[in-house]
Amino acid sequence: MRGAAGPRLVGMNNTPTTSTTGLLTDKVAFVTGAGRGIGAAAARLFAREGARVLLAARTETELKAVTEEIRAAGGTAEHVVCDLADPASVRAAVDRCVELYGRLDAAFNNGAAGQRPGPMEQLPEADFDQVCAVNLKGPWVAMNAEIAAIRATAGRGAIVNTSSVGSLMANPELPVYGATKGALNSLTASAAATYGPEGIRVNAIAPGTTLTEMLLEWEAQSPGTIEQLNSLTPLRRGADPHEVAEAAAWLLSDRSSYVTGTVLRVDGGMRA
Ligand SMILES: NC(=O)c1ccc[n+]([C@@H]2O[C@H](COP(=O)([O-])OP(=O)(O)OC[C@H]3O[C@@H](n4cnc5c(N)ncnc54)[C@H](OP(=O)(O)O)[C@@H]3O)[C@@H](O)[C@H]2O)c1
Image (cartoon, rainbow, N blue to C red; front, side):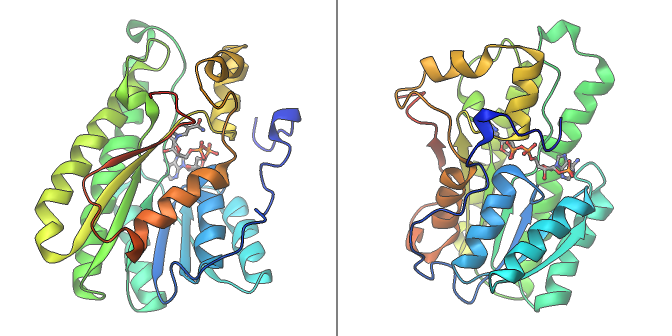
């Protein structure tokens, strides 16, 4: 349920106390899935680190709330409604970024859909198509548009795709979701190899258990999931979304200038 605030969510939207360093000063960053969860935390962090940000997702009320919060804190932010399953709206969102800010330096392709948990033969075919459209075709369309926009404006840049620790192992509960994330890792590596020579870096992050609505939905459908995941995690807890956003900020910054084609686990050690 959207906006549910159980005990596990306490602190989810807390502004971290760490000081900022201007990691993304002078950059323009596009963030999908920015209305809540990891993407909202990333948009807030990127703005605090000096970027001008464009937030994208389907739910305008959420985008507006995060955008206003960023502006109230002194950052520069705009929002655009887009559906990752609708390629025209994804391209229009990237175009809007260039229209608003005149350039694109950094893109965080983070928005994604979960799936109904269960063995793979139980997932309706329409759900399979929808998860693939949002989680794989969506980032493919977005990356293509972003690469064109970076080439045409900043010239060099960085892209980060949000994968999942689930891309690195079997997912008996979320098999199609896991498959889309595995395919996204492959696309990330291919894009890194293709666009590296022109100075465009492409990486992925693979979050583990992260305390967002997506995880709480899984927990609601399969009670006990979070406790089980925490028991498999050396740090014995889920991440606050801002802890995942930190990894994306670094990968989008010039401080990771020799890193491309990697999948960075941000998983509390789950796959160590
Ligand atoms: N939470 C975890 O434990 C976990 C673990 C590993 C990986 N991840 C990944 O982390 C990323 C962020 O997820 P989250 O945990 O922050 O979940 P979340 O809180 O549910 O946020 C998901 C975001 O994606 C957007 N989105 C979903 N479908 C979309 C669509 N068709 N078009 C455009 N935007 C769409 C949502 O906005 P609208 O619904 O308004 O469009 C929302 O802003 C995802 O890629 C997810 O797979 C999460």
